[in-house]
Image (cartoon, rainbow, N blue to C red; front, side, top):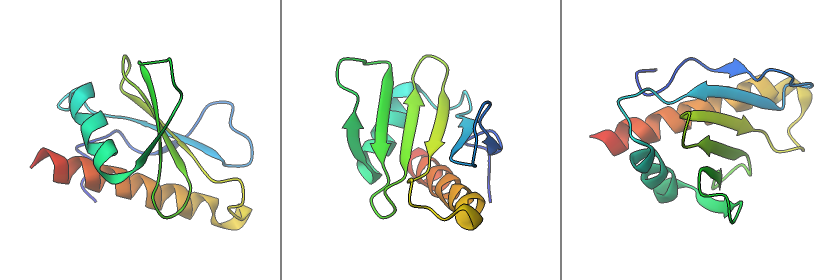
Length: 107
């Protein structure tokens, strides 16, 4: 997997039960480009009124991708029904989807 679009996947600080994961989009992608790419492949689900924080829902799995514009931080929030034994694999698949979308959008 080409991870030039984002830093490596890591469990988020303070996360319990492997539900929250994080990475950062590399500086080669502008915030506008990231938002445009995510809007093309995922559903924008808010939150309204906070323009620097964007939340998207993966079209198939129901997992959420939170993008913080100012820091280029991405938080991957797994669906609450994801079985515990499958959470790391689900996070990796969501991360791979994100990186693939960024790389496709950059080309």
